[in-house]
Image (cartoon, rainbow, N blue to C red):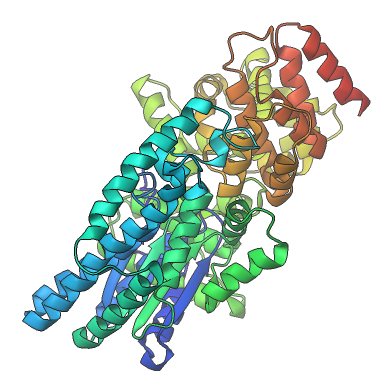
Length: 586
């Protein structure tokens, strides 16, 4: 199986992006500099950061490089202070390594200012709270308040509010104790003092500072914006570069959440003013996904470092010269490389190669590297389960079924498994599809996926003569592992969370979130919604979240059909009958 973490080994020709970023940073006259590495969830932003870091480190030019995981500190500390402390702590370490007492003293002075800035930030937020006037920042610090934890209009529980006020009084007292020691500066003065001391320290260290900010996609809107606000402290300070990995749509949504009522122009301008050089991680095409899958499979075959490095170098060359219109075949890529079980490896890689077009173009995969890797991990997991149970199932069969589940959704996949069970493992529909005979009654669950299913049927291996009962049994049992809602973008995750809290038929907030979520992810969100609603024990009263499903169904016909099927499967209740009728009449 393969790790889901960022990789310092380039399988997707991201090295070109990393080299472009390095070229900008090593030009000292361009500093200070802020670079945005933009892309969707799972697109490979973290890997680009890691590759950039490795290339700069390899040059041994004395750069100070710091990696900051914004998500790691969420809920444990103020986002601004966490970033400041991470940076200044590393500067103290570098100063101590340098061994100059004056520089060490300066580094410690900068480090100590972080506590003062932290205290000032808390004091300003909690000051009003301590006197019974809650502020958004204080509430978030004291009771973990976030909009997705309440109704759309805010906090409803008086006990939470009173608890926040009480905690505010205590925290205000603690913050005042922090500010008593040493000089007393106003917040603007403290920030200016921090900037001045930081600039002086970096000059003494004689080394550019590069900060990589990652995982903003996973943060709450409040934490994401707070982290970006902290970066503003360093803008225009000498010898400093920030490289920020982010999903642009997520940041704009966060700006809208954080600055209520902000215009589209403001949401766009916010990022434009913070990021000087935007670099977009390109969506991998068929050639990139082919190279990616070949490298993953070669890695899994344990071919050895020398073979892997040579194969990777050849694939990278092919990608860089793709404009010539020529790509080496698997046989050509490996023809002069000697290793054990070469024939077996070639067969495995050729099978993997045939998956590339469908992995690159299918709407619910779209060449997303993280999704591709997770699908392959699901296949490996099922193969291990099958082996433990004595099932003679090959990975090719499991791969084809997992791709079907991912691309057409749970409802269509379950229908396939019902057909397999009903027709003793060899459903006639698969024979018709493989023979190109398309003149049959398409199941309702498949009607909207005909083009994909035709292409899928022609993937190896052939299913028409294969008994699929064992595979169907295993796959039906493991469908939750393949459900789409475990591998969706941050926008889709936010939408799902918000829909599950919807109580009324209409919601301006959720309507906006639906419009901001890619349409190809609507079915993923609906399946996640149905999975959660299906866990309800009592349907005598309408559960919260049902109206979220209705709203999403209003925006997409496929979602409408799936949600109607779900409602029809529930125990009969008057409110269910009423909702089904309203969906039919709309």
